[in-house]
Image (cartoon, rainbow, N blue to C red; front, side, top):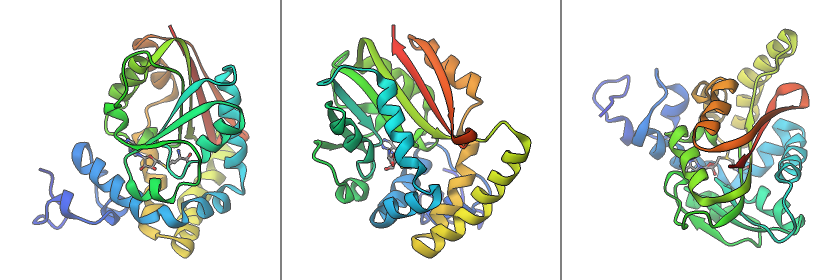
Length: 248
Ligand SMILES: C[S@@+](CC[C@H](N)C(=O)[O-])C[C@H]1O[C@@H](n2cnc3c(N)ncnc32)[C@H](O)[C@@H]1O
């Protein structure tokens, strides 16, 4: 088991603040426990902080993700790591039949959606093979302990021809914008998070980007498990990304 910087406390016994301030970012079960504890803690004000720190752009990004699924109304869609249900609501609005899945009971308890919700790990979805038409996932890929395993699970549960739309944070390609965004994400967002919610959680947010593979690698990982038409759009000058693909 990995040790805290103090050396004598198992990482898994530390509060989620260790995610933000520990020397290394945790991996494996330590990461899963800390991520879950963090989202349980920030759930009550999660939506408010999202709206403030993105100036409501997150609402449009989720709408874009649902459009990008390009599925007929009535499609069965799993919203993975659904959190408080924003994407489930967009999916319902588009006429789909979403089911939300999340690890954090706190987030599920704070959810505002009419969709059925299930507490489960994205890496072990409690659904049969090839049973859904679409999958969405908003801003959670970097929180998973095994991204390749998660993509394989997506491929398992989607029917052939089914679609995925995955939202994540990103860094703008333009150097000046990247610098400005780095300042905002690294300095301003943790302060906003600290005032409105939980400082440690929002100090973790910019650090957690380090878990994400390079974009080309992420697209190759999807192709490797059987997805075709794999593509990536940058949103709002590149501060967010939308990855989409079709199950081959
Ligand atoms: C940044 S929030 C995103 C919530 C929502 N998708 C949205 O767009 O606002 C990340 C979510 O991922 C969930 N999560 C993290 N790891 C997970 C896992 N292994 N399985 C299921 N949910 C997970 C967290 O509990 C949290 O609700």
